[in-house]
Length: 202
Image (tube, rainbow, N blue to C red; front, side, top):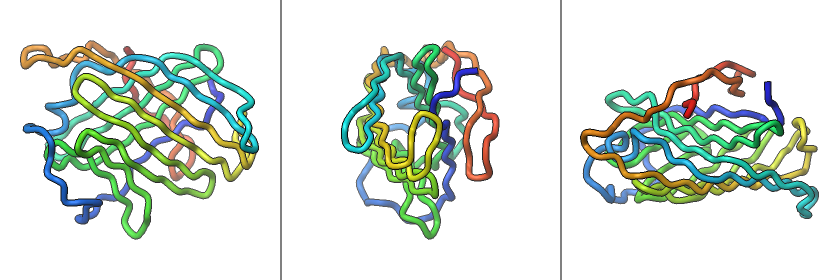
């Protein structure tokens, strides 16, 4: 089993407030706009410690929208670095029209996809994570920075991982909403320790 990086799952409590009052940029709900065919492209990870880049990983990046219900959906960001390891991040959030929102009650942690932009900040005892990027029907890019407060595998305390996913896809048509993906179960780190969770296999 490949394990170089900590693997995250984020499922924050839903609250009524929003980070802004922006109007959704497109008609249709989040799953209708971004579900179906996965996004595929490249992944690049750079470790720095302290402040100086000392290792780089290059591999395949994938992004998929899965497990939709009437009011929520999961977005999975995957970076596969062959035999060096993989990163799987799974966010489950509330659908607000064409937006996806996760906001933790009584916390500054959040993850939002709104107006075709990704914005997020997650704090826990082990890491500080910042997210930025774009999320469009045919293109999705994620820039993520993780500061490690505690040593975890290849990342000593005080080190930083900067991860970049650059992915595209053909925009699905109304009659072509099948992702063509199976699923696989992988170890996913959660608030209560390591658990197993499903991610797309495509």
